[in-house]
Image: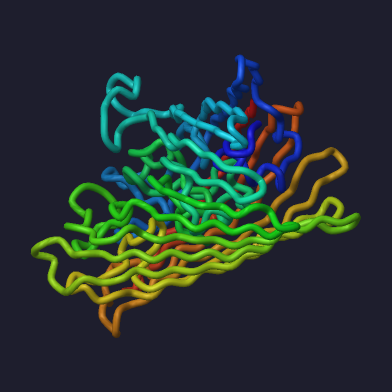
Length: 419
């Protein structure tokens, strides 16, 4: 699997399941080397729901319109099914590369089920379209769409990348368990970290200096929603006009030894938001920062992560980050995750994550979410060097500032194949 697809599709697999880190289908083509790679996964999900009142920004599954407290469904997990096409060549002392990828989904709850309905009901996606060039002596420049820089290591080290994590409440009740409106589950997004998302960007990455590496990126300014209207995501929440690019950056240090390997990192983001007419308040700046570490010794692995921000909101960057009058809400969160490889080569994992959203100056004593948290127990077994069987249990809770509480418990069984 080439390094860029490995990063964007299954970077965490290197830490979580060495059996999945395989090369794709390599095809020599003249001056180019082509790599076809990706994954296919599907899971049966079983959900038990407690509570039914709405929590704005809550990720615990709510009861549906028929007040059902159970839901089942078959859909992809945190990773969508994926096929990527990468080409590499060395020309004029430059390493040149392109990547284009597509992400179909297992579940599509429309009448036809073929994914041809557009917008949020589509079961088809495009997450990567970029070109990069550089040299190990001075670094690499990337232009196009790829995983965002801020919070990218949080999701790439999440063990639920191989599974399901939080199913989410998109669509409500049974709709969430069977795919809802979107083509993946949430994993630990919104209950431990903010989604890095897939962003148009121009990024520079330094050479690797004995384990140390840094990236700085100009990012499309329209990646950030202005959610003064009170919604977490969807049509009508885009900012009016943006007068500068977003800025994201990251620094990391990777180390390896006879007994201990790992990585430590820190990243940040800054966006100016010009509010749409009628929302009130002035323009504002969103800022966020994080720090994390992953260490591995023998069969044991440990990951710790923390983030904080102003106006950054929760779950998706910027969502619910401000009041209707433009006041910024503070937020923070993180997760702790421990794994152990059993003698059967099965990886056992236990994780707890939480995302907090504060009130703004004592306001917001409403159904606005105050906390989403998640506990995950997972088993990830390499049936072959490409195929992993997965069993997970997730307990997800959402609390609002007015005391409303929802809880959903998800059991998931399925498999994920990398090629």
